[in-house]
View (cartoon, helix red, strand yellow):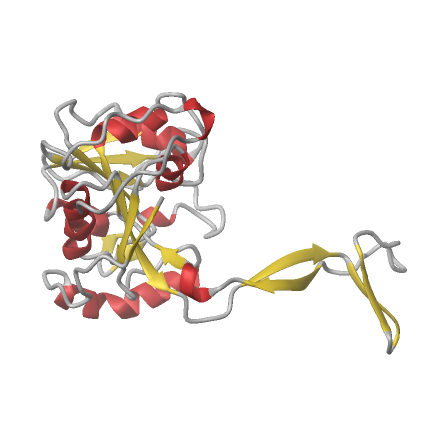
Length: 284
């Protein structure tokens, strides 16, 4: 990793801790399971996957690759799930960033690497956890798993109407008058530019971070979709390693059904490095 370097500076005035060789100290994993499952239709982290709650799977994988685990659960319910011996449990906040910070309060100060994962990625293998941790140990500020794009990804606009005046004139309108009966048309999607597949990745969890840096970017109580973006925006070096195709993101009942089909395969692969260990590229 000697050739990897941070980008100069970062927005928002965040001062990163000095870069040094790898995160020293124990590895701790925070498993985020505090969401309400709005898109799923209920708290999916407690739904069954192979005879266990969804949440139990990332906890088991993390235990094989971590020295300690903190699970962040919703206020008021754990779906009957209890943490295994030695696993710490805390109550999450109203946003993802608040839940990460709740988890950080339970991670010991001596931790050198902190891994962030979630119940929505139940099929990640211990090998994938070790892969991102190894990159941080080798000198990266953070590491995330990513998959190459295999489909075309389009930018889109949402409009309320597509108007065709004649064969030579097609336009869109953001607002239209309601139809008879007061029911307007459904929103329509209009495609724009295609994103270049070569320079984009589908990023999964788990993510690994130098512990002091992760605490630093959260010190200002910022909101963010995910933590590696906060590190990159602050000038940190985020390395992308090969992800695992079976490590799907469960956000809908259909995806949970798919995870159930994949589970047998994943169980047989959890202790292997079948998906590779090489680094693909670094994000600055």
